Length: 228
Length: 179
Image 1 (cartoon, one colour):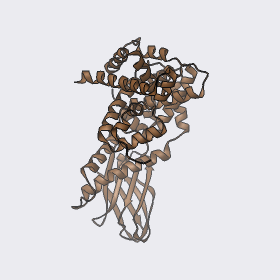
Image 2 (cartoon, each protein chain N blue to C red):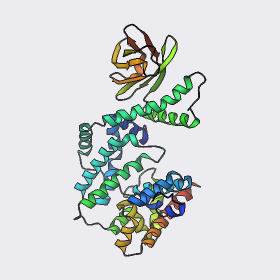
Image 3 (cartoon, rainbow over the protein chains, first blue to last red):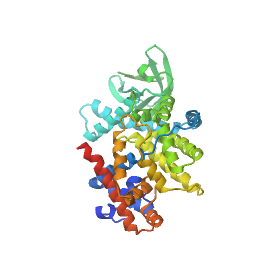
């Protein structure tokens, strides 16, 4: 049942895969093959482009008055928050690969050209959203790198901190200092037994105004990151 | 155009209400128009169109710009919801020839910059009727080759060939002018 399919077996399902009409088993079988076959993947992509273009033939028609308001009211009632939050965090984590590899001294382990392209494309996606800003910086303790900080300006803005190498076991308080001199408490990072921890939160003002991140704990050295 | 479709979608993915409003305004005629073409009843089409935007909002984060354009993604969502609505409301009659006629007809007001669309419209007009029907039933109504074969009383293999040949011919026409 899990025998790999040949291109010949799949070629007559590709058009239906492209139009979205392929069903259950046919679809699963074809997708499994396409996942590992660049030439069938190219064929599927070009057929999909045609199918997409076909849908553009339907004549445009303005909906009745009040349509836009009705839609927006439904969006308000159904915040995409959980999924949205996870999506942003995943994007940040992916871009972290590129940042960490770029800044760590001489280590390129796990950092390939593909990772760089992937991180760039994620950053590109974030940047093209109406000029939204994404910045990253190293978190240091007495000059030693102990983690990374990410600041994403959007609606909402996020600050996300990874503390990979806590200098001491402590419950660190995360605060962000903005360019108007104010300090905002964002949460705590529990580095119990010096294990790595992360913390993040939304900030009310655009993250672009954040100039410094601090992690403080009584009796422990302060960890800081200067945002570019 | 100040902001690209994909940028609006990225804004929606981060929960930006202004991006969502701009997105709805930009695409509402296209989405509603497609919904009406398939379900024909305007009140049903309005539900379908609203649902399409709600779904786009929820899944904006999963759109991958490397896989295609934002318009195609949104219209596919719309098409799938329209098909579901048709299946639920069996009392709505569906006429392939009417739909084909609508799609092949020249638009009342030619849209600026719609050369690609007009090219595929001309290509559709140029297909043998049997292939045009098969392609439209597949792309607009989501009918499988098996369902098309049953509906038009033809062998399964013939239905598959018509869909494949029709799409291939449309693709060839689109690629012709790009060379």
